[in-house]
Length: 226
View (tube, rainbow, N blue to C red):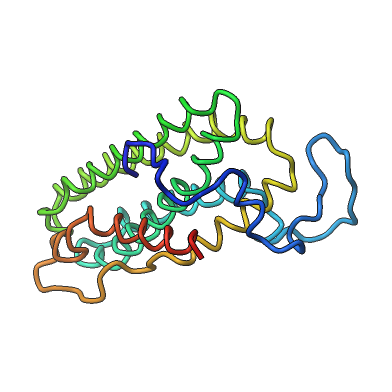
């Protein structure tokens, strides 16, 4: 979620489409109806990257709701889960989705750059919460601001980035990218800190926020390089 465009990351043009087995690259029915398949139940592996990210955004909405609706003393676990999921999601988007938009989509550079800056802004907002007690009203107010930032970013992607990906990438390519996104996301942390301290400030729960996101990025880069 660093605002700078990360051209130094080891992600060559269309490498996403080359790193997944041929088994994932059979074309399926697109919106233009050019291919047909027998009807089947939709699973996570049937989704293209646009459909997968829409589901991811809904999951983040639900995680925010869980934290905000929890009793003050019960916020720590869902909040740790939210931050870990957010870090893994943004790191995979940064390394894969925004990079494809920037490099492989005409006029996608400006859209990708704005998405990266939104992610950096949300990361800074989370870092500003480090000294807040998770049971406090101040934490709730800060979390609601973070929620607005993250959901506004999701809406921006859905409104500006997803139509470009749908227009310029085939259904097959979008499904291959979705498979690679799942792999990168799974390589990230599921919980950024194993212990619940007696004083549940954000810093005590997670460590420095920038470290949570940097570790997620490092893990994704390692996965990309394999």
